[in-house]
Image (cartoon, rainbow, N blue to C red):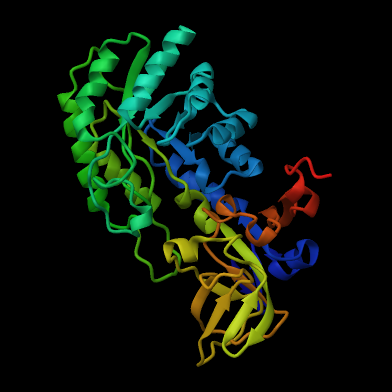
Amino acid sequence: MEYKNNRLSLDGVFFEDISSKHSTPTYVYSRDEILSNINSYNTNIESGDLVCFSVKSSNNLHILKLISSQGLGFDVVSGGELNKVLYVNADTNKIVFSGVGKTKKDLTYAIKNNIKSINVESLSELKLISKIVNELNTPVNIALRLNPEIKSKTHHYLETGSSESKFGIAKSDFAKCIKIIKNQNKINLKGLAFHIGSEIKDFSYFEKAINFMLDQIKSLNVDKPIEFLDVGGGLAIKYFDKDKTLSIEEFVKKVRKLVPNDINLIFEPGKSIIGNAGYLLSKVLYKKKNILIIDAGMNDHIRTPLYEAKHNILPVRKQRKSRNKFTVAGPICESADYFDKKFPYNLSEGEFIVIGSSGAYGFSMSSNYNARLKPPEVLILNKKMKLIRRRETFDDLISEEIGLE
């Protein structure tokens, strides 16, 4: 993204031209940035390792197809996400299924599709899997996702590896899980898994978790050695140039250095692939005092009110920073509906802004709150814009509501 003749552009396409064709608010993605981030993983992993894109971060079919074409697999957390990646003909041997609330229907579907691994997150889930494979008379490959009980330095809503977290199998249940596996010849334990959270900047938390998992691997008393360790995702990205984060290359090399070569690795990146490749284009509707009301709201992009996230916001027309600070707020009837309270540009009504680092957990967490219609998604490739999701219509909004007479 850069200014050309004072007009903000992405990969050769001006945001003003995107707004003219698709209106606002609109999500915009850079294919080149997505491919660059994927390449950073692919060129640094070993031959037996696997990168599984976290579908919860961004689930547009066009983006999933692009990612699959680069040899990546997928990390899914619901039956719907599994359906989506199968719809784009993803390699079933590159799909891992995580999530604490898998239903019997979800698990049955995954087992029938013979995916690489169901990452089991509780003793009760494992018991249900044992029951299903007996009913189907079909084997299943699993990994046990353990809770390393490590508190990482991130927003408390983004923490998934502490002792209070709902995620993963408790240490006290690990031996019980192994006993079930030993007594069930249709369950193949292929690996162990963990995930400590999102927006992790300090590698020491990963190191503690990995060392904990390696200790569990050494203590395993099973017939066959495990094949892989799934280290989850959570690598932080840069929202501002000043942010200090690990590069993808540094992260992968540090992980690989800790893990013996006879154990393959699975990475589950989401934000580090799609986060900085996506933008939310919006228009200033009204200006009052020091408040700019834009047409994108927390229903379109909830990260700021939910996670207290800070995104870099730029005017589409380049201008000098003002001495005054402005609040960039959305149109939703909630006081939490804002994007920035220290915006340094004095914009006028009708001008456009771009909210950066919005590719992950932007559209995928959007909703119809206030009966607002979801925005379109546009992919920039070869200096052209491609519509990959049309703007939602009122007919779409009410299509599931039946029986009105």
